[in-house]
Image 1 (cartoon, rainbow, N blue to C red):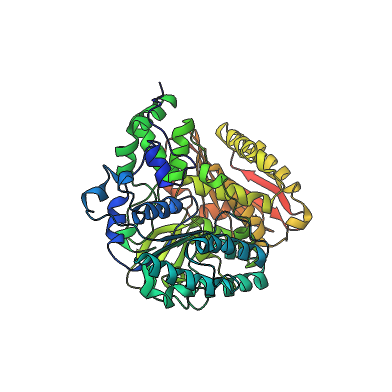
Image 2: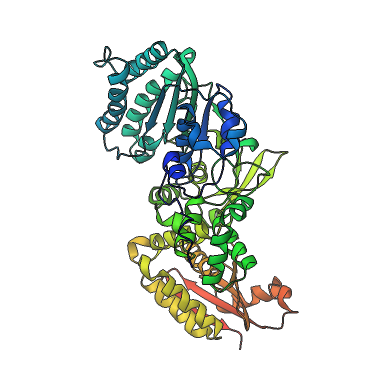
Amino acid sequence: MIDLNRKLPIGIQTFEKIRKGNYLYVDKTALVGKMVSTSIPYFLSRPRRFGKSLLISTFEAYFLGRKDLFEGLAISQMEVDWQVYPVFHIDLNARKYDSPADLIAMLNQHLEKWEAIYGTEKQDRQPEERFAYIIERACVQTGKQVVVLVDEYDKPLLQALDNLPLFEEYRKMLKAFYGVLKSADRYLRFVFLTGVTKFSQVSVFSDLNQLNDISMKPPYVTICGITKQELIDTFTPELDKLASYNRMTPEDTIHKMTSLYDGYHFCEYAEGMFNPFSVLNVFDGYKFENYWFQTGTPTFLVKMLMDSNYDLRTLIDGVEANAASFNEYRAESRNPIPLIYQSGYLTIKEYDPRFKTYQLAFPNDEVRYGFMNFLLPFYSNIPDNEQDFYIGKFVHELESGNINAFLTRLQAFFADIPYELNDQTERHYQTVFYLIFKLMGQFTQAEVRSAKGRADAVVKTPKYIYVFEFKLNGTAEQALQQIEDKGYLIPYQADEREVKKVGVEFSTDTRNVSRWLPEE
């Protein structure tokens, strides 16, 4: 039976509503208490739906002196002097920004609300002038320094990434507006900004160089998201129900939760974090789905990858990045990797302290297979709602040992690719092969190597191990010989399953699989 007293805060981003409504809450207030004890201006970058808005709301409740909302939480043991400060909470997430007028309208909405309290003398000036005046007046009138909380500071910029003139207009407006926070420093008690990206220091934040960017600092890695221990401590009844509903053991349930939703590392050597949005939703319906990925599609990121001629196989396998790429993102950059990382589609897997380089990869299976499924239509003619059907057919044919049916279906698959999607380059063919075999890994053991000049794959089913070699404008005989010459079968000689080697010809003239020789 579902315990109706255990309420999941799905879609709730207001701290007061969670606490008054008796919703489940993962206590982050120990870190909140540490931060509010300082007057340092902070910046935090995290992917969408990772708890940034709730964190902002928590800071707001604290600085409004709402002691009642923090009873029983860690901060209640740390704080003895609950004071009330003027709080300016700016949320840029609630609007679509199609033009500069939309951004001005949003800023005006906030400014007019504060001017009604602290004075309208400057309401005919530019937004940044009005902002500076209101901060000063609020401090003078209340005798307390002002708290400024900005949620999703970069939302207008992200929506204009494919329109550089519009991006530049937004950049200038926001640079002037946020720059007030430096000149008004003596009137400020606390400043906290969140966003998805950290845009270049010479653009948006050039006038706000005193920001303490905690996005990749070890003490703050757990401030958003859920650790494995927090998952167990807070959601054990939900984990038990999830296990029961899916006929799994508790251990297997946690393992599957980990493989699907864990794995976000926000600095080197940090513990993995679970995506809170996916965790809450899986407990709500007791079904393992790609909840986070379905809430937003990375269309512009994929366009950036294709425009920059980025080898997608490298991205899927994991990519190296230097430390500098995490500190900023420039809109005109041809390197899409920093933005893909900051958006949550890649995360830190390894770190080389000697050269200060990071190995980035998909954080978990939800993002891995969600991203690859999203990529496939850009390279093929498979509709979004039929991808699992196609991949499932491929898997069933290999599991049954029917290699001819598998390759015939692969041949039909390539024949359906529209001419305009097919650039007839070797990389295009290899990428399609690569995506298909990688997506098969959801249902069976599939490995594919991306070495230049070939698209080798190994698929392991309960009865068979297939070793594929693809030749572009070569022969199936040459492919089989390469399998032998390079010892591709050696790792599987001790395996009890039947090993099948398959040589496949691919013709650039027909843009398709032309012939194959499976070993009889």
